Length: 282
Image 1 (cartoon, rainbow, N blue to C red):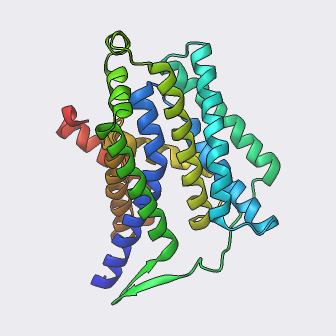
Image 2 (image 1 turned 60 degrees about the vertical axis):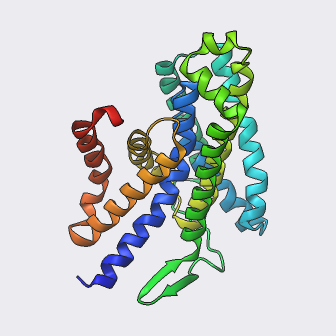
Image 3 (image 1 turned 60 degrees about the horizontal axis):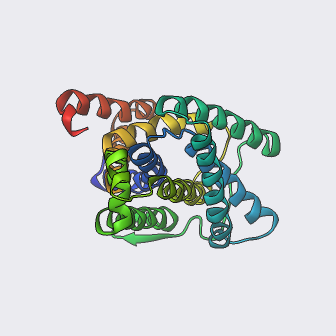
């Protein structure tokens, strides 16, 4: 295999890691700070992808305009879902079961509206790329990666350099002590839950632009991104992006050097190796 082909594969995996990171950030923050394992995050992302497809194909709405509609709408969905969790005092383990049920409902809704057929949102810039010597950088994937990096950096700054972020971290570490110091954890949790769902909408827009859509793909993404969350660390948005890059590059290089059939095993192989090698880091 030529060096150019290997470099192109690694670059493709790096940019794919941006999509993984976008999907993992919301789950990582929700799990780490709210103690809710929101598996419906993946279904919301694909619902956002299908809405982007529908708005673009039927109403000729550009993706950026669709994003301006989808992100606030998903923020509201996140608030509503979190209100249900708070109202019924859903525990961390129960949240996994509840949101898995929500995932099944959303997948059924997607299949009912758009059928199980594969769909592709073709845009004029779908094949646009930037040439760097023998390497071609696809514009859409690069945009998704830059968006993921921007969101990861913003999330880190907000959590570590603002009073609200420090309050969220304090409430997640020890809720009763944080409340004794006047931190209104419940109010803050609603805002974070909404932002996590909005991030799923952002990921959905880029999934629509870069991938072929099918309802059954939700399950195939859950395993990989779940591993990315664990590898990157809970409540760690930059870690989620870094883990996404690691998994994306490993998958692409495996497909290029070994066999595409081995790619789905990569994420869990890395996860198991890291758990055995350095469990305290994870």
